[in-house]
Image (cartoon, rainbow, N blue to C red):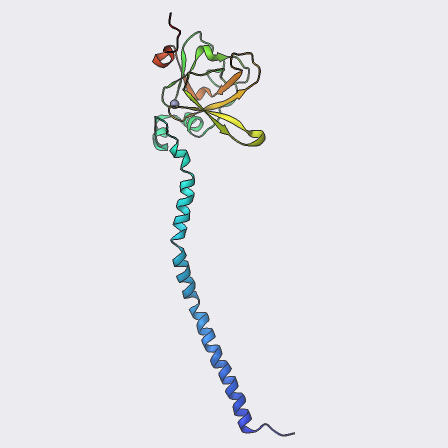
Length: 209
Ligand SMILES: [Zn+2]
């Protein structure tokens, strides 16, 4: 058996050297790789606030509801007490049977919005539904807004004050309580005030004698 010739050994060493030489730029490239990545990140960063603005704009329809009375959250918190704010502005619900107007049946007068004093319901609209919340079968014309709320089995219709967008409660139809419109406006006592004076808006509806 012959030993490899010196030129062969040299060639082998050279090949090895070349290999290590070639591997050097690769490791250098690895070292360089983070830089292009950073560059890539930096170039993509402007899209992040852009996407963020898309999301924030998608929540804007709430703000675009144009009610005559417009106040920001801080202003509502300053005006309303904690419970009024929770129900009127955060769509909360008072416990059944606890509202001060649940068993309240005056012969005349008007219920107004706690948020903006707009006349919403007349005393003559109120009836005893036994549900634990003030119930009305009709409202002052144009005073309330109906809005779909929830989906599927939990679908309901929300009632909002048309003047300030305050949450009043929910409306249920076709329950056959025997009232003229077959509707039950289930309203939180917290969302309304009662006034013996019907005011101009409600008085305008009175039939002329
Ligand atoms: Zn209101």
